Image 1 (tube, rainbow, N blue to C red):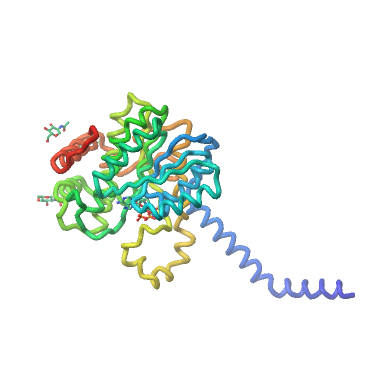
Image 2: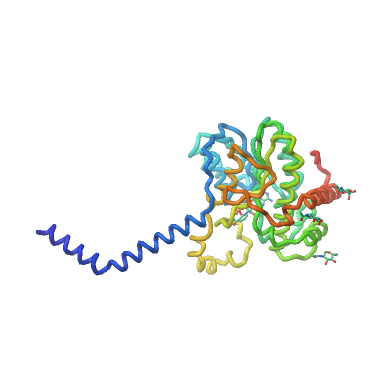
Length: 339
Ligand SMILES: NC(=O)c1ccc[n+]([C@@H]2O[C@H](COP(=O)([O-])OP(=O)(O)OC[C@H]3O[C@@H](n4cnc5c(N)ncnc54)[C@H](OP(=O)(O)O)[C@@H]3O)[C@@H](O)[C@H]2O)c1
Ligand SMILES: *[C@@H]1O[C@H](CO)[C@@H](O)[C@H](O)[C@H]1NC(C)=O
Ligand SMILES: *[C@@H]1O[C@H](CO)[C@@H](O)[C@H](O)[C@H]1NC(C)=O
Ligand SMILES: *[C@@H]1O[C@H](CO)[C@@H](O)[C@H](O)[C@H]1NC(C)=O
């Protein structure tokens, strides 16, 4: 009797509510499909790294931290290259609680060339083989300030620092077969023209909007990727630039619209659906590290090769800009490593 009664109630409930139920099912399916779409490409490589050494700069948060976990799951030995050693030590503890891998914390401040050179010497001495270097650390919308080396903070953190670090680590990268260099860049590189990039490069105190400074640093990094790949063709080092896409990370800490908690909360629905999680943003970097069929000198988005801006794909400009970078570095700093 009571079973029949319950079934009748259920039937009446479904009968009166079916419109709402269908609506709810359709809406959530649509949201799910959109979320999957915006999550972007997923790395399908099955390869394990079996203790090969990977250096990640800026692994204390966002994409770098997510990448460290993804690489630990593949058995890599991970070097967390970070300016905040306390924060990095917490990340290390979290990783080794979950995975049976080796993790090292090494101090690296990209805003100081002496810190970079010290870090690199230490690595070259301690680790004979470095399989991959991920130049991930970066700042966005940072106030215009000069570093101890007299370069703009955005320009040095995002470009000159990785430039110097990469050269200093070529020794241990060359020793490892099929090694990888991955530079984390951004679609923002597209907004800049060459004259503007050269002006910003040659005059570090030139007034410029924060977004322009960011775009300049990322365009410079894409051009560097291109030229370095060409320089290294005789070696077995594969160099690529990866655009992670829009990710929900701490990168927006200096960005006024998103550092305001009310504005941040207001656009949460859009964010939840359209913006990637850090582990989703890290997929293309992971792909560039793991793929058995690597390309070099390319711009990758969603685990595929994509065409960067026309300027960023110009080899003549890439060569000239590399030369310009070496010249401004030579004038301003005395580096102990060969450039
Ligand atoms: N999130 C996005 O939507 C997006 C889109 C396109 C490209 N990207 C690029 O992705 C990369 C990672 O960004 P994210 O979103 O993961 O940002 P994030 O959460 O802010 O992480 C940035 C990392 O860089 C480190 N860092 C900053 N300055 C440094 C310095 N001078 N020396 C050493 N480390 C330094 C930070 O260390 P502290 O913890 O000590 O500050 C932090 O670990 C950046 O290159 C960014 O430009 C991000
Ligand atoms: C670059 O600098 C030169 C000389 O200072 C100036 O004439 C020119 O307008 C600048 N170009 C851009 C695109 O900023
Ligand atoms: C690359 O840039 C140079 C110098 O600005 C220009 O002469 C050349 O046409 C460009 N090449 C391509 C393929 O766009
Ligand atoms: C590199 O820069 C130096 C100094 O400005 C210049 O003499 C040289 O011709 C440049 N080389 C190339 C290949 O552009």
